[in-house]
Amino acid sequence: MASIVDSFNLFNLPETVEKMLFPSSHHGHDHTREGRVVSNIPVDILDNPKEYVFFMDVPGLSKSEIQVTVEDENALVIRSNGKRKREDGDDEGCKYLRLERRAPHKLQRKFRLPENANPSAITAKCENGVLTVTVEKHPPPPKSKTVEIAIA
Image (cartoon, rainbow, N blue to C red; front, side):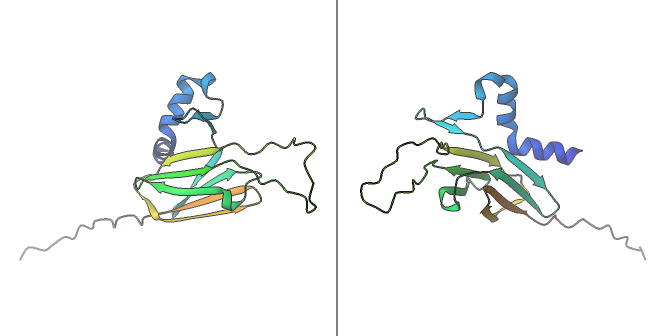
């Protein structure tokens, strides 16, 4: 039970507290310093013995439109600029008559990584609208052994 609570606290404590204190003000959006709206990416985080795995739905975005970085050696940052390529017609003079499909919003999530996470061993893949980011864990430190010494 303690490890579930520890992982929860390490990954999202500031965001969780803000949502609990101000539930109506958030609605899945944050504001940048410039006043732009940035949507939060919904995420599932799996904690298994060797790694942490983040699953995020990013429909309509290709892997080239998503950035996964590590800041300050312990903050995993996932963002997208939210721009959508429009398929232009092959013939000159083609133009859109209607654009109803919404372009993805600017997306961003930050996660403070636990101490046992290895920030130099992170992989990411984007398939079928799902981004999967895997953060390997450092091996656990060896357990100390007590050796009894006979007194002569």
